[in-house]
Length: 108
Image 1 (cartoon, rainbow, N blue to C red):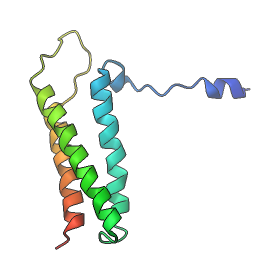
Image 2 (image 1 turned 180 degrees about the vertical axis):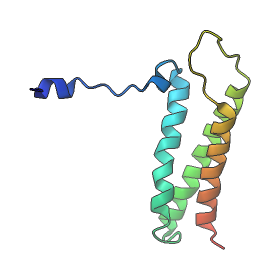
Image 3 (image 1 turned 45 degrees about the vertical axis):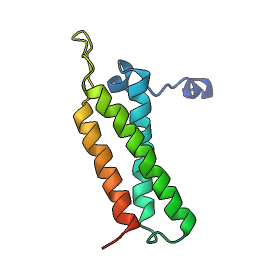
Image 4 (image 1 turned 60 degrees about the horizontal axis):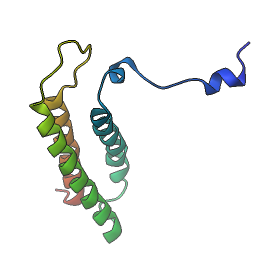
């Protein structure tokens, strides 16, 4: 019978993230945090000035995140590493999120 203490010992550490650097984990976390914002953003079309300002802040943060990812594209990869982050794909995912936010700010 499982005990409550065993439930507390669960550690979320998927294999894909075990061998990645902390910088990569921060980038991935930032992207994952921005994705739900895209879905909730379509509830109203940039309703308030504060909402528009928040979306603009998100876009600036994505720009900074993209700059880190762009610099990381040129980093040498360790052949002994089991997993490698696909930086070009990360950059394109960031661009897709940014485009969604920009479309939200100025719907057609």
